[in-house]
Image 1: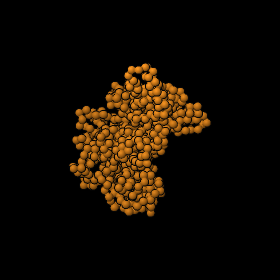
Image 2 (image 1 turned 120 degrees about the horizontal axis):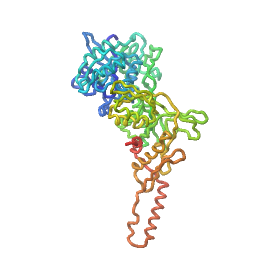
Image 3 (image 1 turned 90 degrees about the vertical axis):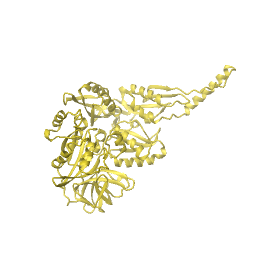
Length: 596
């Protein structure tokens, strides 16, 4: 165990984590020149296309220093705020972290957030200044920022470049010298933390674990303590580029287990794995349960595919433990699921993965956040779906979740960033100049205001120079109402939203206008209305497609034409009573992009 090092890589999005991980794999000879490709650990098409890491990836490397052989277990983590749950799980399985900062951009909001997560777990931090080869690199200024942030020596910061390979030897040496070896006793009963799992269609569920005490052998009888299920360890091993079987995995190591589990519910990330013959008495305190921020309904386009969608969601949940879902039904869309996500990017990625990995075409409803409603009888109602909100006459008051937002930007954009946040009902709590050029702004804001287009607009007004991170701070009372959208007098529950009373009129008007553009015209007139309770606050009318029924009348008395027009009018009236309006999928998503 003295020669094992477990560490992860943390950084803000796009600071070069995956590229630096490639260089470490190359230097330690873990991958051959033939296997090498850019962002090697990002094995999902979606990750390569977008250039972001979505899943954390574990891999084992062998390294020799001064004639002594070492085993490195590296976990590469995502940088985006929506995938911070992946980061927290990776940090739980490590003793050290490489903190990577872009020499041209300096410290960003997500760097700070991930760093504090690592410090809470008492990880040894190795600061690395990446992208030193860029012409815009500012090593001295950024070193000052790092020293201010973590209080380390300037000399302990390692200058590096993932692109050219500069500084990689120094990083590997620092991992051996600074990261502590894992503590634990191979002689004690088996105690391992399950930190991730993936679904393999041929072999069932593969669980990844980190062993704290004891050892696990092939064919052993093991037990998941949280679920109480027992299995045979059909195959165990370590995580190289592919799964690498071993007869035994011991304390301090990171490995995988295949035990023929087919049901997704039987593996819980954060569970403790132990031996049936000689079980451990105490479970490992894993990471806290994930708290979804954004809720949306996901429905199959074809209602017959409901069960297939359930299977797909369960398999996705194995691979992404932060996805939460429960069945629900909607009058407009049939049976589907109410899902909880960590943010809008997370929602987008899940929808994309359902389509790519499971060939499911789905409809996503308007995302919203969870509220707390207090009724006049004194009951507390949790509202994850706008239709759960009690009637206004039965509601005493409603509370909505608030977040503390940290935005780091260049000083020239402070004015526009502030006005955006104040528009979104934000309250400025702090403003700190990190350097003469960079400012950190702290706001308290309602989560509902940042769910839709806040991040996109922040990037636009700051020309990409603002970084954003947030964490929840609890609930506050607000003037909230439920706005319904009615088509032809029929309520479309999938388009209902809980909004602030002051914004209701403007938002209702915008949604009605947008729907008028998106809903195809019918043979009859359609009224598109926005209402709060029984009161209509906005209306647009989609005029009917008119067929020229008088075309066949050439000449003759005017009464002939009038008779045909009256007949058409009666037909349209009857049609309007029985006609159904199909809402295209684009209409559900376009409601989110009202400012485009």
